[in-house]
View 1 (cartoon, rainbow, N blue to C red):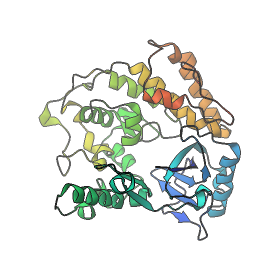
View 2: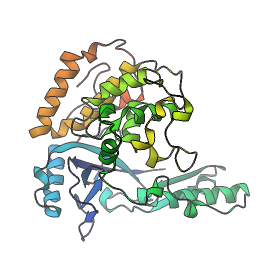
View 3: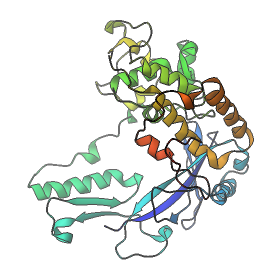
View 4: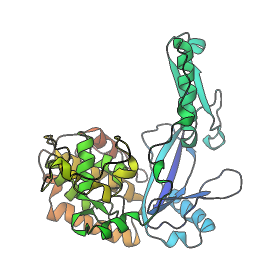
Length: 362
């Protein structure tokens, strides 16, 4: 299966500049959409065909292009504090197509390898977009059921996406809950208002949780400091094995969610995690919290390299001093362990950079 890898660069700014998506009404082009995401806004994206989906250097002209195009949507956007830049690859598929990735179709493609290659019991779903992922799942499962002789109605279209029970997103909900319940002393990530109980509860519900998982779950390290302060606190909490401080009995645990499932809406709510650090105590000890710490911060800095100027440059100089001079993190033992995330950040995003040698740090 020949996939067309199309690289797209995105840039995040430190303000939720708009509350709705702004899209230019023109043929698809670079930097034509501005999307509010929680506390930030993201401008994107470029589209460039690449040969290696693992090597995605972000060039200065790409960042500047995003900011210039963003100014056309929201004048002055380029003067906001730039948090980070990153790139992803679209797995585009168009049989026999050899042109630019920008013009390749975004339609989903379901390949039946029995018909295509004479291989039974093998399907490939590719192409598509995030907005069509549920249709992709339904199409794939319908085909699989047909091949297996299973007659069952698909529930995809009738099953709500987790987290939709809130009905809306209120930007100030975390601040309101922290102030209402006097949780200021429990803050671990002050940028995104993540409390200790939120981290402990996430760890208790996922014994193999990493700092990068917490970033996705509760937005740890996604604010202006990009993990420069909160990462050390969170790593210490995980190293305690989820027991937390002042563990309470189960009857004193947090108010349960609407269902027994671990839902996104409750995971990101400070008030629903009050007292949860004693609800389900775990004996897990993270084998190498130092590796979790190093990997997470190196990955954070990987996305900062292309946008180091102005206030963010000052912030990263402070973070560097804490990392190297105060905490001496690059010499914490053991310094030869690696993880899948280690291999990820060792590919630099700076122009003309090559892969880091194992053990090198930014």
